[in-house]
Image (tube, rainbow, N blue to C red; front, side):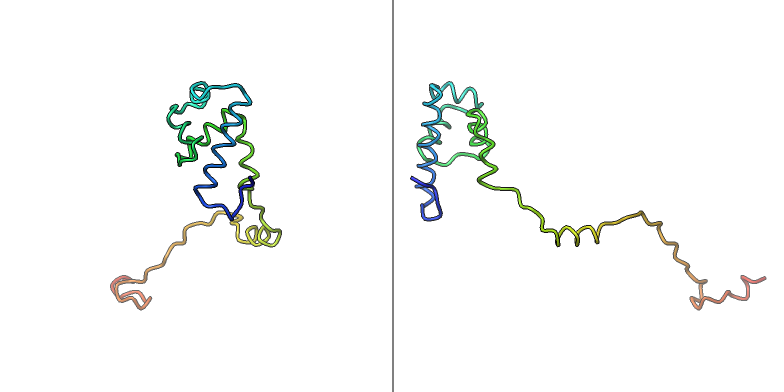
Length: 120
């Protein structure tokens, strides 16, 4: 069975569980052995192979233990930045640090002219 957009969530989880179980059996591992290698509980592995939902970290650990983690690159490929977007990002990038600007605050009368008493 192919996993595609037509499958329901439950059907997708069930197919994924069957595939992981087959990978485990191909490596001649018991559920307990794979659970130990992955650092998850046996019940978690049973839920996963049974097509039930588990935490994403548990799935990652099982995939890593089966040397299948690199397959996630095909599942969610890294997005490439288009050349135009890269140029736009480069154009907006700061090229140097600025100095804080000193603000001139005029005298108490706020006109910018010094008071007569300040001149003396």
